[in-house]
Image (cartoon, rainbow, N blue to C red):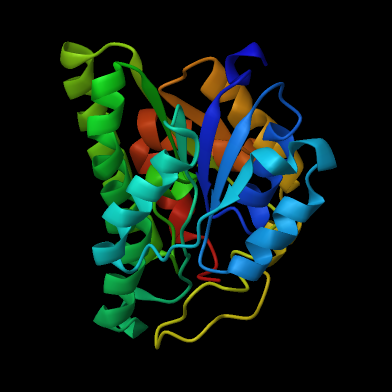
Length: 270
């Protein structure tokens, strides 16, 4: 993947799951330099330590919390200062939710939206002047199949991911007229075997602490990471990554929405 050669890449949500797998795949690329972000500094250090020894000098740790918007402008400035610029921002940080809408406290919806949407677009906006000044850059945002469809038990999560699509589709259109060499890629994974459901928020804000069967049987994070990097290299506007069922659901929703709606009603809420 020559596209990543000598690139400086900032990855959020880099301490576990898809983000961690992305770091390991990117660490294989020639001349790459990485900025790793998540809330947990010790886990970021672990991920850095798992990278090949020869690249560790080109890996920087930048802890941040997407739920703390007042801190993210400074975080962006620090990320740029590490190596002098940023070529690619992979917006991967986020949180999920598993509860019926009628049982979900509004504070939970707000928190999911704060992390998955507002935190993500804050970093994106703070980095935008840097991209415009350099007249180049690439935003790759990890959304979800839930950013296109909605299913029971995920109303807050689906809402936040849908919001990302609206923002980044609009941003892409704006940048096309101002700077065609700034790219926007939206990544829509289906089920991936990570701890996302274990850490998902329930209706009262507590963690689910349970891995559902579909997640357990999902793609490996490594396989997902490879597909994500392929989509970024090809400068795709939107990429669907997952098994046959969840990818088919995207097209069913798009072309046969009534049939999709009938199918969704038959799903277990869990």
